[in-house]
Image 1: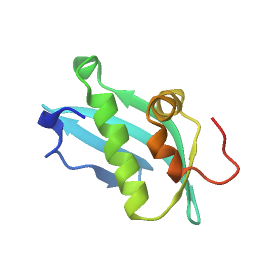
Image 2: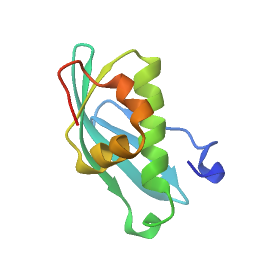
Image 3: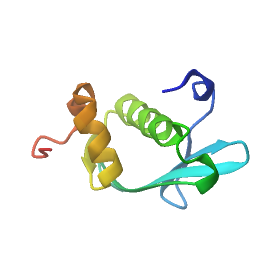
Length: 101
C-alpha cells in the first residue's frame, strides 16, 4: 500500500454491506456479505478519478487487516481480490478452509 493511504480510515458501512475508503472526495468500496464468522467479498469498485493510483490495493489491504482483526474467515468472489491474494499469498491465511485459489 502506498504510504499516502496508510492514514486513511476504512469505514465498515453495515447498512450498505460494503467497506468504504474515501480519497480526495472520491469513493472506493468493496461489497460484502456476512454469515456468522464468514465474510464473502463480492465486488470491488474504485471511482474512475482514483484508478491507477493504488487505491484498489489500499482498500483491499485495509479490508484484509479488518477481517484478520475480527478473526473472520474469508471467501473471496471478487476477481480483483482473488488476483490480489494470488500475488500476495501471505494473506491466504485468512481463507476459509475449503477455499482454494
